[in-house]
Length: 174
Image: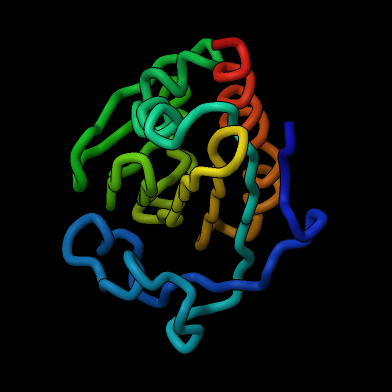
């Protein structure tokens, strides 16, 4: 099992879109949704999180669990609410993570406007799950941008706990 940041735990300085993440739920800027962080002229200071793991299943099987907040949450003994269509709301881990599906490409990518309910109203981060077929299964890469600075370490430490390790163990046991 390989988990963690391929840069040895370092994170890349990134930024938060100057446009409101609340707008992402209505009429969002396409740069935020599909070109996040490629044009730093639209960014303010923040950090990004990148983590990855190789999971012993094909990308479509990993996608099915990852896109299903109810099934993903169940891996950690919690409940969730599924959203299979872009624009719809999801909730994971007994409501501790909520948001909207932004882009769903079966077997390849999931993009979500993602937040903790304790964040300021309208504050969202952008999470992209990228799946690629590799020898032995799927390389799952997680990239998160725009999380509040004071939440960065908490979120980075818990991607393995709630996503990477449970997915890896679930498919290793299958």
